[in-house]
Image 1 (cartoon, rainbow, N blue to C red):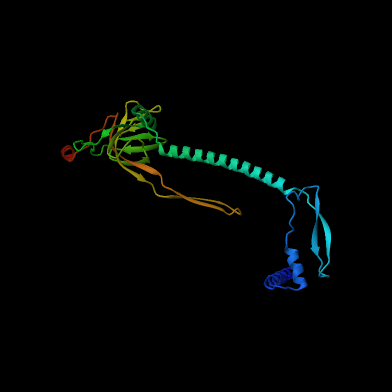
Image 2: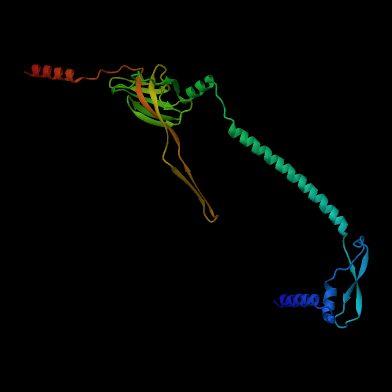
Length: 276
């Protein structure tokens, strides 16, 4: 605080000296103290020294000389600084070029989507476990009444037990649209009241027919990460893309006859006659 006050008083006195035409001797000393000496161009040589006049505060007319040695030449430093700045600018330009190249590559990758050929689409769909037949037409009568037959199918890495008329949700299937008819060819097991067929691991002649009803999103799942005492918290949400399938038919197994009301009535009459 004391040094700050002294500096403030000195600056105030110096300002007053600029206002007065004939300032007192102390103000003249302050004015000479703040002046920069005019030295020759090659003055700042490492081996050279010059005398600088320093005002004497005790007498208004006498000055004494002191020797000041300079450790380096300013011109040399300025040249070195210019060279270093040029080198830094070169590195910055190179970094900018690299960043621009990376940005252009990323944008190109996002902009260009891979186009699959029909053979590639069919091969990938077969690897997942389905085959697209075509669009569902109004004249098609694919939905049937319930049949007491079940099948265990595999779609991707998930397995489902389905029957005729069931609805299942799978991970989003590529290369199929809403109202497409599918054949699910990875059938692991078939069963009914009279028989059971188990594949090793797949039944080659068994198929399950389905129709794509909807592409939807699953409920949001919150992913929260935390590291204690590290001020690290991350919260993210995820909604899985799903495909809704409606099972229409199961083929590859003998289906038992479904008893109709008329047949049930005739059986009751026969039982009653036998009992009588």
